[in-house]
Image (tube, rainbow, N blue to C red; front, side):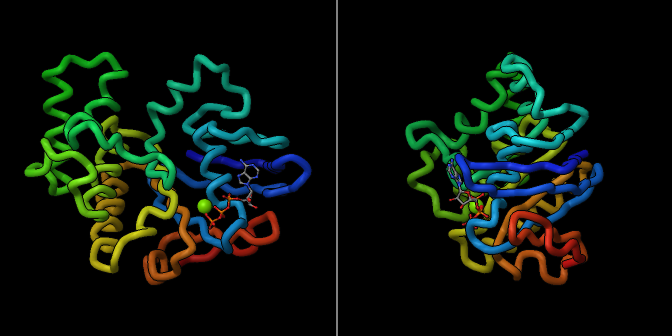
Length: 220
Ligand SMILES: Nc1ncnc2c1ncn2[C@@H]1O[C@H](COP(=O)(O)OP(=O)(O)OP(=O)(O)O)[C@@H](O)[C@H]1O
Ligand SMILES: [Mg+2]
C-alpha cells in the first residue's frame, strides 16, 4: 500500500532521509519513530505529496507520488486521510461543518454528507458536540474531531503525526483505540511518534529512523 524505494530527501543542502526502502502492506497499522529531527514528519509529508522526494520512488495506493501532476494530487488526497500537527480545525466553524467540509469538496449531496458526518461523529463519541465550535472543546475532543474529519472520506490510508502529542494518558488511549478500529475496517494506518508507550506492546511493526535511514524495523 505504501512503498518507498531508495528514497532520498534534502532540505536545501541538508540530507534528511537517505536511501530509504520499506513497504507497508494493505491493512497494516505501523509506527514510525526516532529522535526529534530524524525526518518522521518529512516522511509522512512525502506520502501525502506535500513534499517531494529528491531521489527514489514512492508508491501510495498505486500512485507514483513523485510523478503526480498537480491536478491528480486531489485524487491521491481523497484516499489519504491525515491527522497532522499543523492541520488544525477551523475555529469559526462548528464541529459538524469542520467535518462536512472534507466531503463538500467531493460534490456529495447534503443528505449524504449529513449521514456520513453523523455516523463518524457517533464513532468518535461526539454526537452531542456537533454544533460546538472547536475552541470550546477539550484537547482530546478536538483531536477526535480531527480524526473524524480524516475518517469521513473513508481513506485507504490514514497518516497521523504525533496524534497524542498534547493529550493525557486516558485520551491517548482513546485515540489509539480509534486508530485500531479504523484499521480493523481495512484502512492502512501509519503513525509517527516519539512516544514509546504508544507502540510498546502493540505487536505492530515499528520503523526506527536515525541517521537518515531506518536503523531498526521491529515489532512494538
Ligand atoms: N520545510 C523545511 N525546510 C527546511 N528544513 C526542514 C523543513 N522541514 C523540516 N526540516 C528539517 O528537516 C529535519 C527533519 O524534520 P522533521 O520535521 O521531519 O523531523 P521529525 O522527525 O518529525 O521531528 P519531531 O519529532 O521533532 O517532530 C529537521 O532537521 C528539520 O529542521
Ligand atoms: Mg515531526
